[in-house]
Image (cartoon, rainbow, N blue to C red; front, side):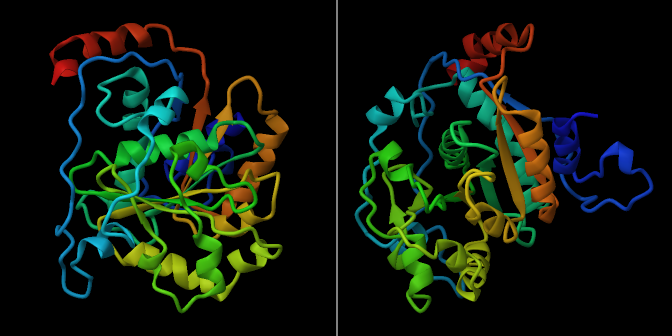
Length: 320
């Protein structure tokens, strides 16, 4: 059995077949197949943006103002959609595409794992780390597109955290001006999280930057302040999924520390490039998390898949 197949079984909450007789670590996880990302975009008619969720989170015990829901500023920061389009990211309002459908397929099991069939949050499973074995495999591309896809949900919000504190890139990729974030929060644990959240012009999308560079970032991520922070992020907003874009697993120590706090992990593997030995090593490192979902990036198309996608994109379904 291949390493990817093992990871797929773990993503479905099962033990690998060669571990027969051992109890399942997570029998309640959503059953799923690995998602393959081809990255070819075929634009059709525009998809409408969801309505902003201002005021929707007015619940007992939670701040009801818009800044508490979406971020620290009453005026949204601008995501540079033209810049993102040039880089091949999903762009809200650009219409249905093969890429958009692939991320819809990826987010469904993640949301099901996080909130359960009843729609209520399952403990810590709304904390999702996106990582890879090595640099350059597309983990930030996956994290940003996944966040944008989840932001189109009608009853969900998404917080995208740049946890690649060694080499942050979300601000540069999105065109956001973010000068403080995760590391600053960990250095000053008494500060209110909402002071560091960046509300964006994309409805339902909030960003937490990486913050300033720090020589002891691994220790900060392993601190009691980090444990307290992830607990608050997990429970503060019951409708929110929190996505962490982490460093590659084999490049730094921060990602291994971060993985211990997560309820789900998305492992990005570049087709035809990532060595099998590297994937094998990372899968063992991610044994700290019950749910690991593999994503094969830049995969060759499945025979017949483009035809099937084209059928729906060109038909009535694609024009709605």
